[in-house]
Length: 79
Image 1 (cartoon, one colour):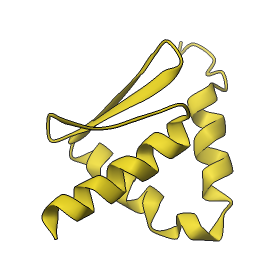
Image 2: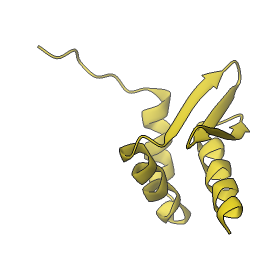
Image 3: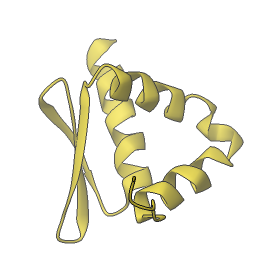
Protein backbone atom coordinates (compact mmCIF):
# COMPACT_ATOMS: atom_id res chain seq x y z
CA UNK A 1 0.00 0.00 0.00
CA UNK A 2 1.34 3.42 -0.96
CA UNK A 3 1.03 6.34 1.44
CA UNK A 4 -1.41 9.02 0.40
CA UNK A 5 0.37 11.84 -1.37
CA UNK A 6 -0.19 15.28 0.06
CA UNK A 7 0.14 18.59 -1.71
CA UNK A 8 3.37 20.33 -0.82
CA UNK A 9 4.60 23.87 -1.35
CA UNK A 10 6.69 22.50 -4.22
CA UNK A 11 3.60 21.00 -5.90
CA UNK A 12 1.71 24.28 -5.50
CA UNK A 13 4.64 26.30 -6.85
CA UNK A 14 4.95 24.06 -9.91
CA UNK A 15 1.18 24.18 -10.55
CA UNK A 16 1.04 27.97 -10.21
CA UNK A 17 4.06 28.43 -12.42
CA UNK A 18 2.64 26.14 -15.08
CA UNK A 19 -0.38 28.41 -15.42
CA UNK A 20 1.65 31.34 -16.74
CA UNK A 21 2.37 31.62 -20.45
CA UNK A 22 5.86 32.96 -19.79
CA UNK A 23 6.70 29.67 -18.12
CA UNK A 24 6.47 27.84 -21.42
CA UNK A 25 10.22 27.43 -21.51
CA UNK A 26 11.25 27.48 -17.86
CA UNK A 27 9.45 24.35 -16.71
CA UNK A 28 10.34 22.13 -19.69
CA UNK A 29 13.99 23.10 -19.07
CA UNK A 30 13.62 22.18 -15.39
CA UNK A 31 11.86 18.91 -16.25
CA UNK A 32 14.60 17.81 -18.62
CA UNK A 33 17.24 18.53 -15.99
CA UNK A 34 15.20 16.63 -13.40
CA UNK A 35 14.86 13.61 -15.69
CA UNK A 36 18.64 13.58 -16.18
CA UNK A 37 19.23 14.17 -12.45
CA UNK A 38 21.23 17.30 -13.23
CA UNK A 39 19.32 19.73 -11.00
CA UNK A 40 19.09 19.80 -7.22
CA UNK A 41 17.36 22.18 -4.88
CA UNK A 42 16.82 22.63 -1.19
CA UNK A 43 15.27 25.12 1.15
CA UNK A 44 17.63 26.58 3.73
CA UNK A 45 15.90 28.80 6.27
CA UNK A 46 14.07 31.35 4.12
CA UNK A 47 15.79 30.73 0.78
CA UNK A 48 15.82 28.15 -1.99
CA UNK A 49 19.20 27.02 -3.32
CA UNK A 50 19.52 25.49 -6.78
CA UNK A 51 22.46 23.62 -8.30
CA UNK A 52 22.85 22.44 -11.88
CA UNK A 53 25.53 19.92 -12.78
CA UNK A 54 26.82 20.09 -9.19
CA UNK A 55 27.37 23.86 -9.42
CA UNK A 56 25.39 26.27 -7.24
CA UNK A 57 23.64 28.68 -9.60
CA UNK A 58 20.85 30.41 -7.66
CA UNK A 59 19.63 31.42 -4.23
CA UNK A 60 16.23 33.12 -4.00
CA UNK A 61 13.43 33.54 -1.50
CA UNK A 62 10.93 31.49 -3.55
CA UNK A 63 11.27 28.21 -5.41
CA UNK A 64 9.86 29.76 -8.57
CA UNK A 65 12.37 32.62 -8.59
CA UNK A 66 15.25 30.29 -7.76
CA UNK A 67 14.49 28.08 -10.77
CA UNK A 68 14.11 31.11 -13.05
CA UNK A 69 17.41 32.55 -11.81
CA UNK A 70 19.13 29.20 -12.24
CA UNK A 71 17.93 28.91 -15.83
CA UNK A 72 19.05 32.45 -16.67
CA UNK A 73 22.47 31.93 -15.12
CA UNK A 74 23.05 28.55 -16.78
CA UNK A 75 22.05 29.94 -20.18
CA UNK A 76 24.30 32.97 -19.68
CA UNK A 77 27.25 30.74 -18.78
CA UNK A 78 26.75 28.65 -21.90
CA UNK A 79 26.35 31.61 -24.27
